[in-house]
Image (cartoon, rainbow, N blue to C red; front, side, top):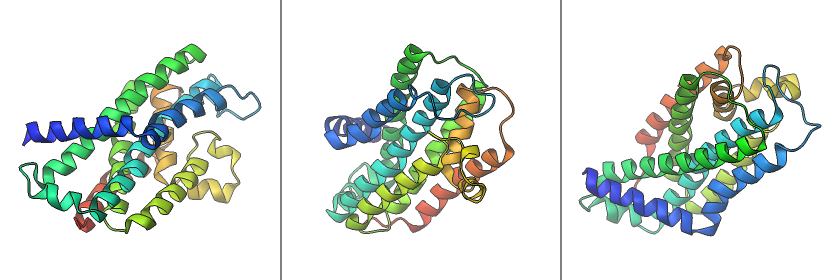
Length: 243
């Protein structure tokens, strides 16, 4: 099982990097976001964060996880279902578990590439490490689980044409409410409270306090990401349809 799964994961990573739109979504846009928003001086920075670059770097990493796990996966899975690819792969030695495992491995590999690229660029822009690496690892793992689960749930239950528009809409909403470029404290109170229930804000907060900010992690962010990180994959497994 492991060898076919790894081979499939390697193939999917290669295809993603070779496809212009997928590479744009998972690598280019997070880098551009870091370069542009990390250089803007007039946007607010949360208390306890030493610099705007630190804040935007954490947001770009969270954005990359969201793009790889939710947006890219939902679209890929939906069209693979639509064309019968998943159904055909399911009867090969790879099996259904192997397919899911390969997709998870693909997301992790892409996120590691994103992380290396973003940290290197952030360091050149003046990023100074802060926070607790263990918090970052926890946040990264839970965010990966949450957004990959959402990607599989959306792509595994809805029609491909609907997924394309819905995933893009969710991506924009979560980007705006995810404390990735603008802190939650700068949003209207009612909107900030809504954002605290969304996985993007929880992911951004944990990654921020793991890599780029001192001080305690807000309890709401931990609870938020634990619920999404466990709940989204469980619901996806329950409702996923292979064709």
